[in-house]
Every structure is written in structure tokens, then in C-alpha cells.
Image 1 (cartoon, one colour):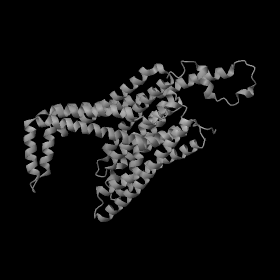
Image 2 (cartoon, helix red, strand yellow):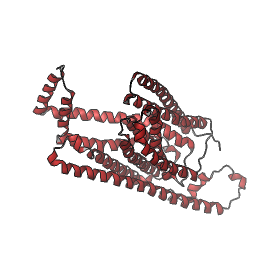
Image 3 (cartoon, one colour):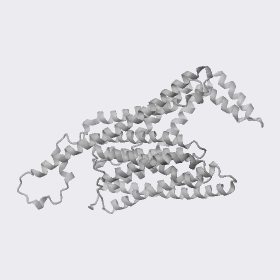
Image 4 (cartoon, helix red, strand yellow):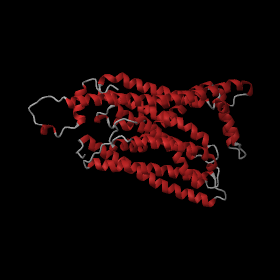
Length: 446
């Protein structure tokens, strides 16, 4: 069906068109430059080193981002021209995604042999994309299975906007926070006479041509053992970072505030925002693989991707519920608080899993360190199941609500109001225009 969108929708379509087109073009051009740099590095090196592999990995990442922006550009152009499309659920996509998850398991077993092979520069980049995308695809299909989907323009617009705009915004804010932490940390440390003495010694050593960088590493390791530094690190990683990311990850969903999204559509848009963020984050982490340690990073990032999808989906579900009915302010705030708590606990546990090597704990206290690290690993595994349970719960809850609303709409259609108007008077009314009035003020509670 084609219809002329409202003025705000046209403005949003132009915005998404500019952002997606410029971001996609930048990504594709950047991929070309990285391929050239990787080729030069490959030709100059006698042995295929980590640098060329990393460059090729990043090139493929940029290519993927560029190609994902193309549908957003196309649908933005169609929306501007007044052509809108409706998505319909396809049960086969979940089956395909489940088959892809099985393939992912086989690819994980192949990851280390490929990573350490002489042809890693050629085979590893597409493998990195596959092992990153397949789990995220399955999470999305699991979360939206059986639900009425948003329009393709909305879905691809969320993806394009999140890939190009949301991540730079979040990184900028996190860098600002890091700068403030360093400033206040420097003020705190400068008040310590021991630190001032160490700084003077460091300045003299750096001017020495025989300076050993290991000395600098040892000094920073000693600095990290300070209780104040440890608490500041945990506060930033498990407090400030989750607050920022859960607030701004669904930034693209805010553009849809005027569309009267249902809670189910809000949840789906949030999942797409979280998946886009996780895609960047996971691919960046895996791009440095090539030394044989990529399999461990790969498995760990699977849980991180699920976390980002679930938390962003919850926050967006809360926002859509509030936009639909103003009495759901508590639901919106509660969803955000729960998302921050889950994210903070995940980050804190991730830091604690490496607390021993980070702090260089002495041998006589190693049992305590091992207990802390083991406990953190258990928490991470438990959080994976909690997040998966939340994903299944939200899908089941929203499907029940959708079914109930469908029954109410069917009753309304089967028992229309008796009026003097002819049937042709209603030829331009869409089902979605009459469903809310039939369901009453309590419709869309979920």
C-alpha cells in the first residue's frame, strides 16, 4: 500500500536518508582504504603478521556496515516518495536463524585453526563476520517470533541510524566521562606524597636512553592495587557506562515516538538498536584476533550480544508503553533500572574475572582471588540464562497481548455499529485505525 507520510515522517525520512547514506558511503570508502593498507602490509611482510590480518578484519567490518546502510537509504527514499510497506511475519526466518545457530557451533570449532593458518588474512575476516552475525540474528528472530512487525522503513531506519549515529554518540559521552575520571583521579593522586615521588622518578627514567618500558608497566600495576583506583574502575565500568549505554542505545527509537508504537513494536525496535550496537562492539573486539586467542573472545561476546539486545528491547518496550498510555511511567523507569542493573552486574563480573592478573595478587592470597574469579564466571553464565529467559518471556507476553487484541478487533468487525452510512463510506479506513478504539483505554497494556 502506498500513502503520503505526514510531515514529521518526511522530515525523519530525510534525516535517516542523510545519515544512512553518508555513513554507508564513509564505511565503504574506509573499507577500500583498509584493504589497500592491508595489502601493502601483506606484501611488505615476510611472514603474514597480525597487523595485516587486523586491517583486513576491519575492512570487512566496514563493508558490512556499509551494506547494512543500503536498505535504510532505499526505504527512506521510498518513504519520501510516499511509498510505505507493511512487514508480515514469516515463520521460516526463525527456522533459518536456528539452522544458522547450528552452523555457528561448527564455525566456532574451526575458528582457531583458521586463525592460526597461513591463509588467516583471507579466511578469517568472513569467518569473523559469520560467527558474530549468526547469534545476533537468532536472538532477534527469537524475540520477534510470532509478533506483528514494524514497517521495513522503521526497522532498517533503526539499524542504519544505530550503526552510524548512536555508537559515536555513546563513545563520545564515555570518553568525556573517562576524561573527567582522569582529571579527578590525577587530583586525588597528586595529593599523595608517594605518587609525587614516583612521578619524579619516572620523569628521570624516561629521559634515560636505556629506559625499560617494563618499569612503566610495573608502576601502573602498583597504581591499580590502590583501593580507591579499584573502586573508581568498578564505579565507572559497572555504574556510569551502563547508565549511559542503556539511556542512549535506543536513541533511534526516540525518532519513532510520534508513530504511536505498540509495546511489541517498541521491543522489536529496541532489539534492533541493541543488535546494531552489539554488532559494532563484537566485531571490533574480534578484529584484533589472529594470535590464537580469538575463540575465547568469540564465546564471551555471545553473551554480551544477548545482553545488549535484551536490555535495549526492555527499555524501548517501556518507552513505547509510556508513549501509548501515560500511566505507564513506572514501567518505563522500571525497565530502564532493570536494564542498568543487568548491564552493571555483567560488566562488574567481567572485570572481576581478570582481577588476579590485573592486580598481580601475591601467591599467598591466590585462593581468594581464584574464588572471586570463579564466582564472577558463575555470575556471567547465570546472566546469560537470565537474559535468554527474559527474551523468551517478553516474546510470549507480547504474543498473548497481540492475540487478545486480535480477538477484540475480530469481535468489533463481526458486530459493527448500525449506522445509516453505506459500506462504501468506510472504504478508506484501515484496520489499525479502528482497533485501538475497539479495545478501549486498556488496550496495549503489554
